[in-house]
Structures are given as structure tokens and as C-alpha cells.
Image 1: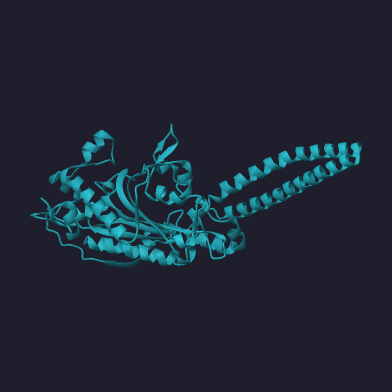
Image 2: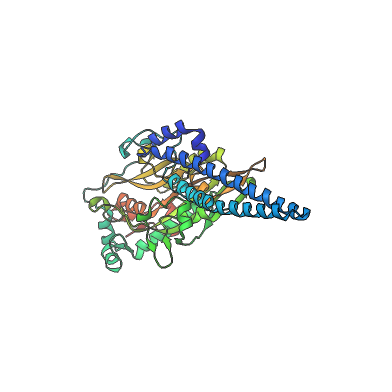
Amino acid sequence: MLQVQFIRQNKALVLERLGVKQFKEPGIVDEVLALDDQRKKLTLEYDETQAKVNAASKEIGKLMASGDKAAAEARKQEVASLKQALGPIDEALRSTEKLLHDTLVKLPNLPGPNVPVGKTPEENVEVRGGGAKPSLAADAVPHWDLAKKYDLIDFELGNKITGSGFPVYKNKGARLQRALVSYFLDFNTANGYTEMLPPYVVNEASAYGTGQLPDKEGQMYFVNEDSLYLIPTAEVPVTNIYRDEILKESDLPVRMTAYTPCFRREAGSYGKDVRGLNRLHQFEKVEVVQLVRPDQSYTVLEEMVAHVERLIQSLGLPYRILNLCGGDMGFTSAQTYDFEVYSAAQDKWLEVSSVSNFESYQTNRMKIRYKDEQGKNQLVHSLNGSSLALPRIVACLLENNQTPGGILLPAVLHPYFGGDRIA
């Protein structure tokens, strides 16, 4: 959530950056400022009225002590009248504060200075890439056929048990999932991240804190009786670990990693683009999260991008890194890099990770702060990234490494999988 004071002091900049993000309702900025003016006016009126109540109450005691009961009684009636007037002012102030908050959360995060201008994914900027696209045999097949051939994943069984988008991993397919999760977590912890195992459901405050609410209600599974949400990503529970906390500057950076299943109702359209593992309602992912000083967040963003890049390189997959343009960024992000790996049998690039800097947008909602050198409370910056999401990694590993002798696995997975291939 943006801060009203920043909007007031930098209105022209705010409008310019909202334009980069292709935001369609810039008039909300003026609504926020008008509501803040009304809030200030009501606050002043309330404080002035309360001051009169306090002053008159003190005077009553003095008048009673001096024996001037008539004057004291008049003051009592005045205090009663003033207290009665406080009620409507307080009600109007609370109503205005709520409307201000509800209006403010409609504004997305502002894109950072290095975000490209653009409206569509086609205008994202490729930063760099690596790895060679494999040359497959003429009879190479996509991962859903490989999954059936080697009895790794049963999409029809998942459809029977639950519905479309909920596959069942079997035999060596289940073992490959476990191997990837263990490897990703070990890779992250070896690089200074603390492993966490958070809940897979969160309350409304947690979903609001990271920006899933009120923007993405329709994309989350909701448990009505308990008012809890199934998590769309580990980012939600892990970042909320520090909600309403004031950290010491020496505590920063906070670096966390977690494996969780992820649940998303909006799995996308039907057709070849969502076939197999390309888009699911339930999938597994390992996440990395950092809380850092504001002056370090963009340096940390590049470090996190390099971390994910090394992880993908270790799997031997061809990849590219995209700096997302303003129109293709998420609501809460200030800058996002997407990682895509090349799926040889499908002849297409598949997104496997997003690494984002949210600056103080999330931490302002969650009130995650630290004490600076002057002893003042400041908002930290939050960042997170997929490290990595499993389904499309599995799809590319299966497709890109298929041979007549089976599916060859990258060397880093051999000790986790217990072998060098799926045959």
C-alpha cells in the first residue's frame, strides 16, 4: 500500500509512474488526497472539541472548590453538550478513515526506475539468457506423453479424484518431485536462507498483508466456515511471519526459504497452452523471501536474480531472463524479473520463476519495520522469488532430456533421485 504522505509530496511522480504501469484510474490519486484533507479536518475538529471538554472539566473542579456551584453547573452542561458533539465527529472521522483506506488500496505499487515502458508481454525486455536448446529426435514427444509412457503422472486419475488441474504423481514421477524439492531447499539454505515450514492456509489479515486481498479474491480457494484461504504461494505465510514486528537494524537482511504446495483457482484458459503441467490448480514450489533495508533492496533484487539463475543453470536448462514492462507487472510489484525455460518438445518458453521487489508496498500493510541508527522506525523492503516452481521445470526436464535410453537427469539430482535417469 502506498503512503499518503508520499503521494501528497510527489503527486506528479506518482501519476507518471502509474502511467508506466498502465493504471486506468489515475483519478483515485485525487480521491485519496481529498479524503486525507477531510480526515485532517475532522481530526482537528475532534481534537479541538476534546480540548474544550478537558479545559471545561478542569474549570468545574476549581469552581466547585471556590463554592461557585451555579457556574460549575453551567460548565457541566457545556461539557455534556461538547461530549454529545464529539460522537458525530468521531463517527464521521472513522468513516472517512475507512473510506480513505479502502480507496488507497485500489492504487497499485509504483514501478521502479528500471521498469521498461510497455503494455503487453511482447514488450518485456530480455536481459540475458543461457544454455543451448537441445536437438531432439524426430520422434520426440511432449511431457504428457512421456509421463504416460514412463508411468510418472496420471492426469486422468487426478481429474477423477478432484478435477482438472490436480495431477497425481506416481512412482519415479513422485520421486522426481521429492528430489527437486530437497535439492532446491538445500541450494537455498547453502546460500544463507533459513528454511521455514509455514501453514498452508492463512487468515484474511495475512492475505491482505501481501496484497492478495482485495485484488485477487477470485484466484484463491476459500474455506468458508473458518474464513481461511489456501495459499497461492509460500510468499504469503512466510512474509507474514514478521507482520507487526519491529526489527533491529542488525537483524537485516532476513532471508527465508520454504517449500509449500500452492493453490490457485484461476488456472487459465483451456487448450494446448494449459495441457499437462503447463498450468495447474495445485502445484509445488520452493520460495525465497528477503526483508531488507530500503537502500539495499535493488541490489538484493539483482542478487536474488543471480541466485535463481545459478539454480537453473545447475539443471542444464536453456533459459532467458525478462525484465517485465509496466503493463505486464503484478499489482504489488515495483520491479519483476521473469525466468523462462525452453520446452523443446513443445517449442515454447515456459515461465518458471518470478523475482520481485515490492519496496515498502507489502510492509506498509503488514507494518514490518526496523529501528534505524537514529532510533526511528522505518519500513523495511520485501522481496521474493520462485526458487523454483516445479511443474514446468519437470516438463522441461522430461522433454529436453528424452533419449532412446530413457530420460537423463542432471548430475545435481542424481544423489537426490537415487539414479541418473528415468527408464
